[in-house]
Image (cartoon, rainbow, N blue to C red; front, side, top):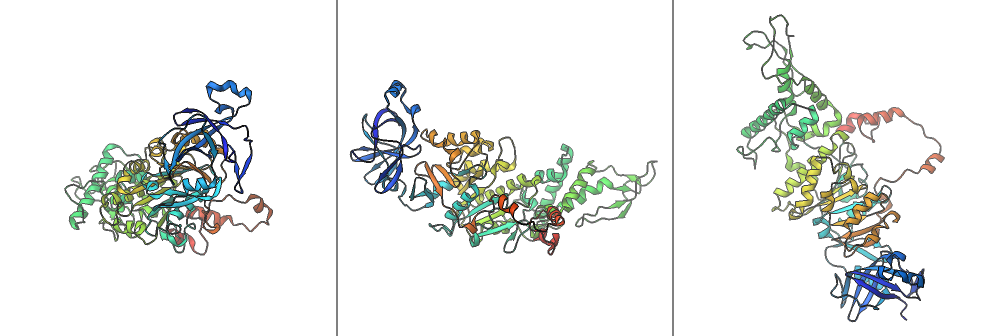
Length: 600
């Protein structure tokens, strides 16, 4: 008898096969060709010879529950069963997904050896990248189809501590110039919420940070690239319809004046809207709005202002007028163009002066003067993010206050998508040079209930991005909290250890071939081990992800509590802690001072 024999086919129901284990098969380990194999493991392969070709299936269930219902009484006679899902076949020398025929009753079922696995997974073709090794056969590499990984989108899911960040770093290294396949023209943008990845990619990545370190770039996001209604909501809070309409009219007039003074390529004055991404000055807008709120008049005809100090828009100094009287004598209170938004304007001024928001409200060379003219435009912004000579861009968003994080992620994605969409026929567009956008901590801004610009834009990317060369990789520890539309559009799942039952259910729903037994192993996966399924994988596979070098892993390791508590206590300066807090910069030092760190 062949040493690989497991049993024989006892029942066939579509692609589901019930296998009666042979009496000679004992549980434990089989030694074949000098290698040891675990017998009857859920998720492992079996082979069913069919003359000139072999059928292959994956074990999904073993034990009493795998016994066919019609034969349930046979358990008393000692028969053992397992359930197998047919997934493909080898015709001549190549493996193909799907089957052309079904096995017959009593056909032999064999254990799959590493030589068989090498045929299934080892075929190397152009456009594949190695991401790890088979968990039960370390000599067999696991490859993913890069085209389908990007165009059909993907999700990396795993509980805290499962190795999710390291897996993402490993995947991106494999997809870039650091990988075996060597893609120097790759274009990957990573939204790094916690500032973990700056050290992971070395010389193949450009890092943008609000408070940049040496060798990094300053991250700025021009406020005028956001819809004015969103930025006004952040600056001023709730406004009634009358005030909101009047303010947006002023913004639109400022954009019209800019285009009239200096024609801008691609802008048609007759079709532009208030949302057209054109510069305008928030400081001038504040000044134009505050003046009617505080103005007084020296005459009843309201032609002479009772001005004391003119004020200045660029420095946010409001004009000062003589106080209005209450006895119907000069100076008189203004009632022309008054919106009653003095409190909201005070909040707007505070936000404009707040250094935590300089990256957005005073965006360096993208900050317009009071006439709306800025030194740089969106072309330079996209050139900096996407057009440099390195395959990876890391946008470190850890220094961005949570109050604006969701809006800014939506704006970043909008800038990237709109640029690549409208430039799709050009060499820098998405079709000529596809773009992968990796979204860490996605559950924070892609929730089911949050009607946010980030969620709306990601929905558009996963629905339409395939046609325009824009792919999404969703990374999350809580897949159950992510919007259903977004997760359902992900064609490839890389699922690490998941303990929460609701999260596991989301992954199970995405598994093909009714392989629920594989998903049942999600809670017991080792750190750095993943189940990969979907369009980029030849077959669902349990994989050990290749680890990056120790000095290139994300800064997301757990603190070493025991070691830290054993060593002697170091001097502590809580003044520096508070200074870092106030500067919103964990790298703040007394030598550099808060101003230097914030401005970069």
